[in-house]
Structure formats: C-alpha cells, structure tokens
Image 1 (spheres, rainbow, N blue to C red):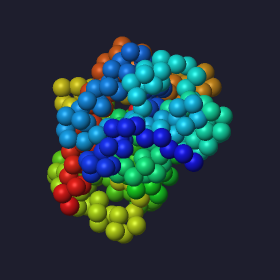
Image 2 (tube, rainbow, N blue to C red):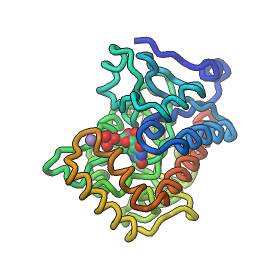
Image 3 (cartoon, rainbow, N blue to C red):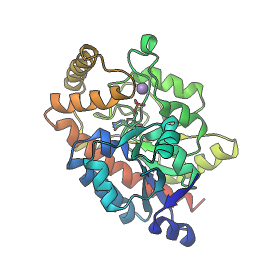
Image 4 (tube, helix red, strand yellow):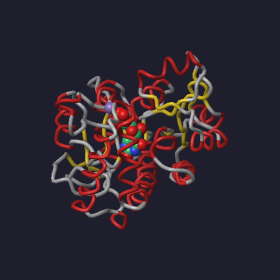
Length: 299
Ligand code: PSU
Ligand code: MN
C-alpha cells in the first residue's frame, strides 16, 4: 500500500523535526462547516507555533495521505461523499478510490505506518451507554490497545459510558494519564468523578512513553481538561445528552452513524455552546501534542 506524504512532512523526517498527526473525521463528520475547516487550520497553525510539524491524515481518491493540503481540507469540510473510516474501512476506501475521513483508530494506524508517534484530537470513541445490548464499543479502543501512538484528547464525551470505557482501557493495557490532573476529563467539563494517574508535565510523559514502548506497549492516552473558560455545566449537558440519546433511539440510528448523530444533536440542543467548547479543546490539545512531540526528542 502506498502512503503519500506531504512535502512538509517529508522535510520534517529529513530535518528530524517532531511531527503531530491530526484526524479528519472531526472535520468531515464531527463539526459543521465552516467551523470545521477553521479549527482544522487553527490546529495546524498551533502545532507549528509550538515547534512541531502537523500532518492531517485522510484517504484522498483512494490514496492514504499523511498531510492533507489546504484544498483537500476544504473538500473534507464541505463534501458529502467523504466516508467515515475506522481502521477496518481503510482497505475498501483505497480499493474503491474513495475519499475517506479517518477516525481515531484509522488515524492511529496510518500515523504509525508513517512513523508518527503523537496525535491530537478532541474526544476518543469509547464504550456506548447501551453497549450491554448493542455491543457498540468504538474501534478506537482496540486500536489503542495495539498501535503505539500517544493520543492527546479531552477524555471521552459523556454521550458514552465513561467508567466502562476506563475499565476497557485498563483491561487492554492502555495507560491513561491526566495532564496535570488526576481526574479524567469528560470533554465538555473537567469533572467526571473518575480518577486516573496524573502526568505532571511533558517531560514525564516522554519518559513514561519510552518505558511503555520498551515493554512492547501500544497506545497511550493523555487526557487534557478543556480550557476552563469553555467548560459547560455537567448537569445541563447531561440533560441535552439524554435528549440526544432519545432522538437517536427514536430515529433507529445504528453503527457508525451513532456518534456523528449524537454530536450534532448535542450541538443543536446546546445552540452551539458545545461546539465552541469542542473547538477550544481541539486547539488546546494541538498545543499540548506539539509540546509532547518536542519533548520526545529530548529523552
Ligand atoms: N469524539 C468527538 N468528535 C468526533 C469523534 C469523537 O468529540 O468527531 C470521532 C472520532 O473520529 C472518533 C470517532 O474516532 O468519532 C468514533 O466513532 P465511533 O464511535 O463510531 O467509533
Ligand atoms: Mn460504534
């Protein structure tokens, strides 16, 4: 399989500059236009400002691409023919010559294939609240179990079952560190009531990563609380989530459509407030990921 890398990414390898992978599902299926392309560009700019080279990942006309150019970002942000790709969806997208936005699992797979160790996103997928009957557990979790990439996120959206997601990650040996906190963030808020190990700074993360890799470990989660000025009231947000879940149930939404449906329902319910939080934490995570990528060169 051929992987195309952008010139800036190839140069980064040659110059031994740190790289940060970014996903494209959040652009194509996670946020509305034009906010999606604005935040994608802002994340790339922030990664550069903090000393690393950004590589947004996707499948472009059947070609796995590391480092989408600006016109392709725009296409992903606007087009309705862009597939949502988990790891298992990459092969057919390539064979069909299709366009595909990569989720966390697919982005990790391609980032690793391209030699990139750090990846910034918003929230990872996880165990859905109805998993006992639906069996809906995101492929992000199994990917984290095996693919060695540091995933910088704001934890897991509370549309999911957070305690079950943390249990799953423990079972499959994925380290989950709060960035400067021992409380697992819940995406819209810093508070989930769930404890994780605290990693105090990027140098600590870099040392822990080397140890994890030396032991043959796969992925690692760095959970960064959302910026305080953008956090939402957990009780308020839970009301909207319950409404979104009821709408999904009534509309019979299943499979990979569930997450995008719930995200846009919550955005509607909160009249865009949750979208502002989403954008702010994506940008914040891009900064932290760049700092971690830089720190990896120092250990
Ligand atoms: N969480 C968000 N926004 C998103 C996603 C997750 O806050 O857009 C996307 C990510 O790409 C993640 C995917 O990998 O949803 C998970 O989808 P599923 O639940 O179908 O595995
Ligand atoms: Mn699912």
